[in-house]
Length: 191
Image 1 (spheres, rainbow, N blue to C red):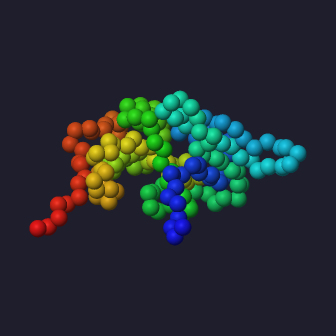
Image 2: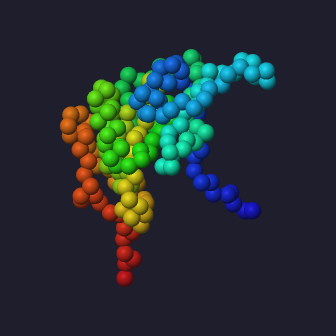
Image 3: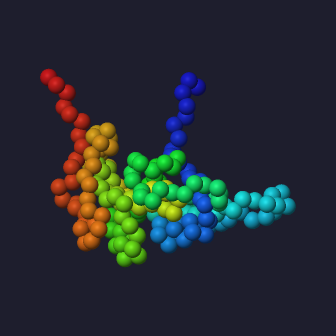
């Protein structure tokens, strides 16, 4: 072989967190993942790290072995007081969580707003509609629903470069348009 094998995608993400209990509450009560396991002492590993594993639900109702894992590391630096998309000094800028549908995404936004979760950023991208929040460690978390493939597939770069910033507070933060969403096409070749 003279080139790498193309992977299918990312299998899971492991995050270092300062307080596993605080992060557990965030990933279960705010994100909505289910804890599916944790490391426990075994003869071959009597002192495992504090580590828990979380999964969302697949379209067929099943669970993946884990989508996200948390490892407690009390020595992590404190997160910044204010989160911003490109100004947070953490190694992971943000984690994008795909919601099952537009309706589920909108329902989750309403749930988060009702719980008093601060919306850091609300945008329309060319391939997703997104809400950004942040976890207790400063990691950004993006909730997305994917727009239909035919909206962006002909010009992925154009879709990636499109952004429309939306309100983050009040009823306007829960509005989402389906009409008038741009479609991205490669420009026709010059004649």
